[in-house]
Amino acid sequence: MNIFRRIFKIGQAEAHAAVDQLEDPIKMTEQGIRDMKEDLDKSLRALAEVKAMAIRSRNDVENYHSKAQEYEGKAVQLLQRAHKGDLNPAEADRLAGEALLKKEENVQLATQAQQDRQKFEASVAQLDQNIKQLRSTISKWENELKTLKSRVTVSNATKTINKQLAQIDSHSTVALLERMKEKVAVEEALAESYGEIAQESRSIDAEIDKALQGSDARKAAEDVAALKAKLGLSTGTAGEPQA
Image 1 (cartoon, rainbow, N blue to C red):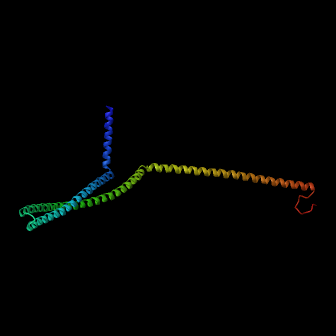
Image 2 (image 1 turned 180 degrees about the horizontal axis):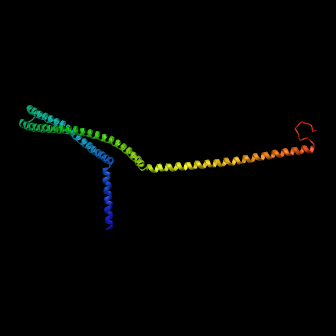
Image 3 (image 1 turned 120 degrees about the horizontal axis):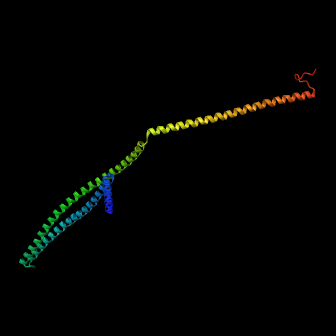
């Protein structure tokens, strides 16, 4: 039972796919062009066959006229021979009559062949006109198919872009931007904080160095005073002699 259900499902899916394919304007147009090209091939074969019959009819007209003239000439020759005494007059009349009957038969055949020729040539002209129209229609459809394919390409691309744009949530995007701004502000504040800490560290080092430099100067002055006292020099104003 399950296998029949599966087969039914497969058949149903294929049917739906076939319907979708039929509803595809590009596939329908391509199939229509293929059908018209097949009709064009059939029309070309028919045209060739009808042209062949027209040519044959034209040749038949010429052949029947030629035979009619030939039989008429034979009838004349029979009567002339009988007149000269070379042939029995009664026999000559009989044979001349048969020759004229053959002539008339070929004249009628030539007339029929001429009628057939006119019909075939009319059919050739009609088929040729139909073929020209069919070729023009095929060319028109092929150009329209190119335009249709281009339009489908553009519409699909536009649809894809619009779909992507439609899926973008403006509120979530704004919220994301706000979170990014907040994060950047935090990072900028943190960087400024580190800068101030570094500056404070540098200021303390400068004060320490300055204080150390003052201590060294006092020690140097004290050492100079001690040396002067040892030498018995006055600690008064420089350049003045001791009293």
